[in-house]
Amino acid sequence: MKLSQFLHNPAYIAAAAEKDFSAGRSFFGELALQYLDKNDDYRALIASNLQYFNLPCSRNDVRQTVLHTGYHYHEKFISFSKPPDFYKALFNKVSVPEDVIAEIKQNQESYEPALILCNHFGAMPLIVGLLNFYQLDISAVTRFPSEEFKQINEQKAKEIQKELACGRVKFFEPGTQLMAKMLPALEKGATFYTVIDEHTPSSPKITFLGKTITGGAGVDQIIRAIGTDKIHVYFTIMTRTEESYALDIRKVDAQHQNFIQEIFTGFENNVKKKFEQWFFLQEVHENIVK
Image: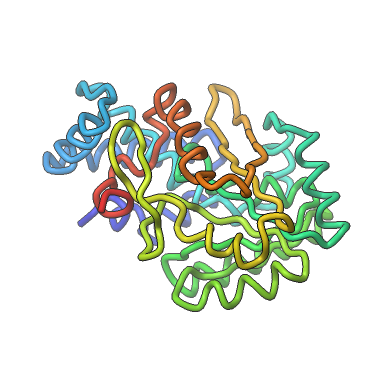
């Protein structure tokens, strides 16, 4: 059983919704470490992946990486499962680039298409909720563990939107028909949020931390279909801090031929500084090394 299967336990998911933020984060961090202590193969996998990318790989480095993997699942399970006041208190503490938020809001008011890209790093499961909190309408491409979990998130998102006057969120499942669904919505001025560090058949080869990986998840095809001069593209990261989180959003020049490589080159700095927050250190060869 993988760590993801271990943590996708209905009792643990329920606990995430019931516990306060601090207790919930500690709970999932400890669960992840318990799994690590019982699975030597998993410990060897994390150490090997750290070493593969020339990142620190001591026993403590492995434990910190797994601890943050537990935090990731906590953030995933609370992304839309808490009462509205919880998000108001949580997101008011997050440092955000308000000028970029205002720019994206202006894009939406002018019905201009936009893509907000991210990687599996830090508190990425909470980014959509945070953007909604700032009155942005987001079409999120995300994979749910079950149809039931998807429906719960959709219903909770509507409740939060109504109570806090947040932006709207629509969920799109990854799959072969995704582009056919995205293009008409983008042409009408939608803002999509999607991850770009998962392998797809259309992912180009790029260089990252001295290795060849696949990146982009085919978003370059979507951008070309809409028109590089018509779509606004951003790359975002939400880093865990001691007290809260810090959101960074950067404008991407999609007209540059190697913009995907440039995104990952910049992302290297995040991983070098906070490697333990890079979620895919447990799934490197499944998702980005092909």
